[in-house]
View 1 (cartoon, rainbow, N blue to C red):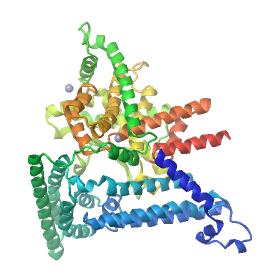
View 2: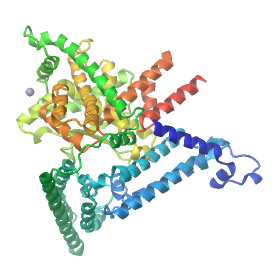
View 3: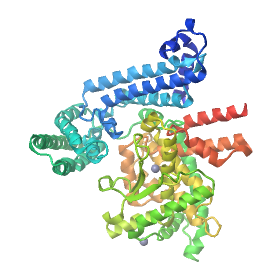
View 4: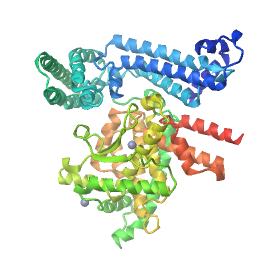
Length: 622
Ligand code: ZN
Ligand code: ZN
């Protein structure tokens, strides 16, 4: 909140100070002395838009050049051959880059204005605010957080190699392998620098780094040799790749061995940095990444209040469901025991493992029809969602996920990737299916597909902003998907014979409780020093999660920070905005119009969308 206000007032000061002369010079218009007529505001806007695009492109060109990994992930390959080592010199170069662009972008609104008014649209000013935040976050991370000195898992070369291997539509195999060859040569220097940079490693992150490096070995041992063979490379091109691949593999193995030595010595001494961020760093990271209208402590309090409300509701629902499930059997006196028993019993209802993917396929059209019939949002039948089994190289990460076409590919299909369950033993599959039971599977599809992530992406693509696509706000994206669940429940999804389903109500509350617990866990672990047994108590007993899920979540809470909070942050902010607009607009409030207006701003932080929508609402009243 504070940071946003500063940016806003700085922009305002520049807007009033800038002169018409600098504008005409910038826009290549005739100087005022010779001008017979001032340019029309449409001309000024168009010229400003052009100049804005030019600046954004100049920034991105610079950014892609300096951060080739991010470029490759975004589908830009100009610098794909470069693998900069994480040296002190590189840190300095990145800091200079941040300073230079912070200044240059802050000057832009002042240069692009006319008659004391900004020539930039609110959307363009929003893009600038996002870039400003991104650059400040980068600078903060390199000067205050300094995770390069303690998080060994930050140094890993694998992902861009995998991207280059698996994106055949971007460049022919020969070209991609030539980039891979160039990159491979730089791997030894990369890991030497990474080791040197590691000053005070956190043992938890050290173990994560070792696991991930070992997991990535398959790339050098199998994937790259296979790609060389498949491309039919011969002679020097093939020999060079094989030689550099072998060197790279040796460098990774040496790095793993070095990290294991450090890990052993830290185990003996009991030393090393804590995985916990601590209050000051967590709160700053939360502000940069979540960009909410509350600070970290405020969100934590909000989550505690929601948890109490949800448990109250779950208690009532369990009371009502008990006789139908257990007849006269005595209810446990303990609230958590009672709710847990009811959830356990309901979880028996689930699809057969071999029906899992087909069941998801059949639910998507039903969700789409419901959203249309209940006037919640407009969908785009020309851009259908394709449900498919997750491609092999992407499996095992999320279970279910959406793959959207990148900003460079506006006509591509959107995929709903579902991992088939054949990777599981029968017992594991049973446990997974109990979790994604009859009711939960519907909530999952709402979250991932309709009207969750897939619909949000469809709408974001209608007002394409490179900046919001590349530097968009994760809390808004996840918050929307979580809000979509609530929207569907409120519209009566899951009702049986026209009556609200108690079972769906309870399962949805459990799902929502997970989102709330994630936020509580994040803050508790990094700021309040929560122990493992306290975390498992929160997740297993008080949020009804399986032991496996709770243990995985405890691990994730240690190795990530200010990420588990993003779902609840975005969700609670969207809900609050909706309620505020409902109160303000009264009879004129239309749910569908709210959803579409909200989504039209792209993946911007909710507090930014909120400001724009409230300004819009005020404008309508005037
Ligand atoms: Zn079963
Ligand atoms: Zn999601």
